[in-house]
Image (tube, rainbow, N blue to C red; front, side):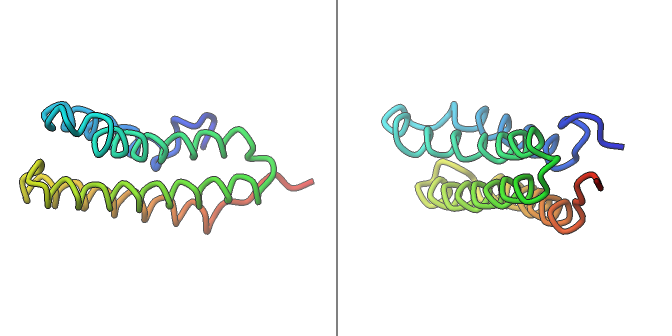
Amino acid sequence: MIAKVQDIDAFRISYVFAMDIFQLTRSFPKQEMYSLTDQLIRSSRSISANIAEGWGKRIYENEFKKHLIYSMGSLEETKCWLIFAKDCKYLPLEIFEELLKKADEIGAKIYKLHENWRSFQR
């Protein structure tokens, strides 16, 4: 049963994912602080934040689902910034691949939640 947003797998996993990215970006060059680092942190945090915002509107099925779609958009944006980080040599290939694997897992969970969510019947 889902009683709070923290009970949603996609939320929990995406929150940890954002925290992992935050920790990784601490080693990025200082000149990237207000560009790549900031964008990567913001987009990764937006994944779980959009799930949470949608959860707050869950009695309106379309509103919740809209926020899940926004969450997917933030996930794809994060993947793009990770590609930049890899190509700029800030992320080793094996860490990049691990993060993409986690991102794919998150995406699958968000998609499944979107497909299966039904708001309260009136």
